[in-house]
Image (tube, rainbow, N blue to C red):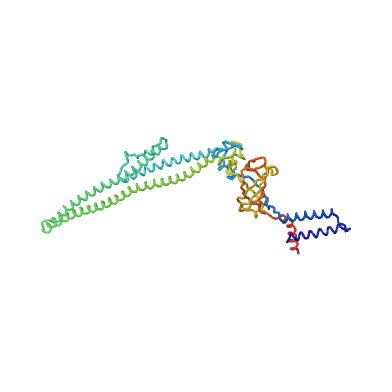
Amino acid sequence: MFLKAEIKSSTLLQEKIMRLFDTSGAASPTLHLTVLISTTIFIVTLIAACLLRVEVTARGTVRLVPLDRVQVVQAEYPGSITGILVRDGVSVSKGELLLTLDATPAETKLLTLVEEEARLKRENVRFAAFLSELVVLRDGGDIRNGKADTSSTRAGEDADEAMQARLLEAELKDFADGLAAADARLEVNRKAMEVLQGRIAQADTALAVQEERLQAAEKLMKRGISSREAYLKVRAAYDDIRSARDVLKREIAKTAAEASVLDAERAGLFSANYNRFMQKRDGIDARLAALRQERRALEERVAATQLRAPVSGTVEQLSVTTVGGVVQAGQDLMRVVPNDSQLEFEALFSNEDSGFLEAGQKARIRLDAYPAERFGAMMATITDIASDSIEVGGSGRWGFVVRLKPEGDALQSPTGRLALRPGMTGSVDAITGDRRLISYFLAPITAQFSQSLGER
């Protein structure tokens, strides 16, 4: 209907133009032909504008990057450079040594730590040997030849191992001396007990004899044969013997109590030394655990002084050139561009175009290295759109990062295949849709009409 109205209006326009120029009333063939051609061109253009559709694109900038990403080589710890083994443009293999840093401070500390760990282990062996001999003594055994079995401690030949062996023997000798003193006190107590028991046996015998004498003296006194004075003398002797026997019994009880104390002291000698050496072993075990953690950290630090290639590729942007220079932790030293890695385009689109981008859309890429007027463009497909925007160059403008997969590994041009290299830049036109050509002509009119209706 819209097309018919346009044709009708153009016919009326043609009639008015003919009446305008045909003032004399005479028909001019040239004028008629000109008007006809102009009208035909206008109608054809109008029909084409209504039928033809053009692509709607979102334009952005693009950069070619490896799919595996460029690997940045950084210093994990600060240090001075002792060797630079590569230069820009050199191909390296994965694990190849690139640069070395001074490892002397870390190695020195690691050596000190290893020596302390070895010393603590030898002390631990000494304490274990002491505890083993202590158990033997507690169970009634004897130290062999008065010395400990230090074969495990004497496995080495250095002075520290020999010193540990001497310390073990001295500790065992000191304990054995203390144990011998405790045993001697117990032996004295035992002999004193034997003496007291012998004396009380004698007192029992004497008391029995004196008791018979007392009974005989009492009978004689009752018969009048003996005087009371004689009876009292016998009675006094009996009481003296009985009192002496009671004293001996109390001494025996005291000696038995002393024996219990001496037994407890002897047992305490074992438990005190056992607990003391067990605490020492626990302290050493805790220190050894801490040393193992420190050693692992130092070994990692020593290994970090040798910077190796994370991937096979080409060295780029080497930022250090002086042996002896100091680098800081986290400093970028070089980049390794992976070899034989698939490439993808990393594009940046403005915030205004981001709402029309979708994964799977086609895009036309023009590389700066290969001008499109001579070598043409290449097609790519949008594979991923960032979920958040980034600020572009600190200018206050924001954009979205979009990743595109090229349809080939090279640019097909009339002159042949042109290789793609990481870092190439260019422009990208993402095809977000299409629209009729006439809409471009009607858009300003529609916008102006909408604005005019909104005026007060």
